[in-house]
Structures are given as structure tokens and as C-alpha cells.
Length: 79
Image 1: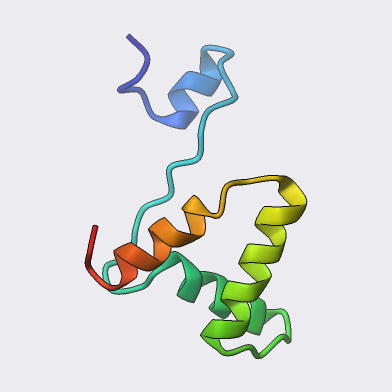
Image 2 (image 1 turned 90 degrees about the vertical axis):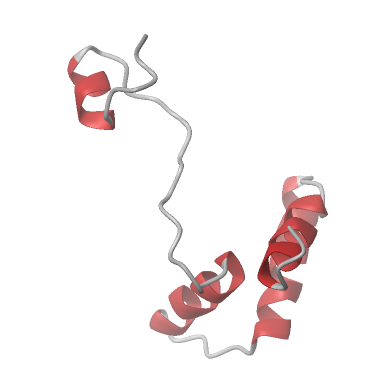
């Protein structure tokens, strides 16, 4: 069972691809994190504008807007 191994130990075994599971930062939503990352790249956007960018990216990538909705529901504490 390799599911409990850290990424570096799996890599040493030759298993180098895995799903990303970033650590959550309490109190900071995914949307807020993306807003901060965009700001660091010189794009100062309000949260509503970031949400629009996320929605547009979902459309381009043919991802369900469910993922964006889930982020928003988590932000307001519903899930």
C-alpha cells in the first residue's frame, strides 16, 4: 500500500505522478489564494473579477462550474 507514502518516497520507487492535494490554509479560500497569486503577478483584481476568470477558465477547459460553486459554498461555510 503506497497511499501512505510521501511523494518523495513514491518517487524513489519510480512512481512519480500523483494527484495534487495541497494543504489548506485555514481562513483562506481557494479563490482568495488565486487572487493573491494574480496580485503577485501584477494583476490587482477584486474577488468578483477573480470568480469571473475562474468561470471563464472552467468554460475553456470544459470543467463543470460545480467546482467553482463548491469553492464558494465552502467559503460561506455551507459545506
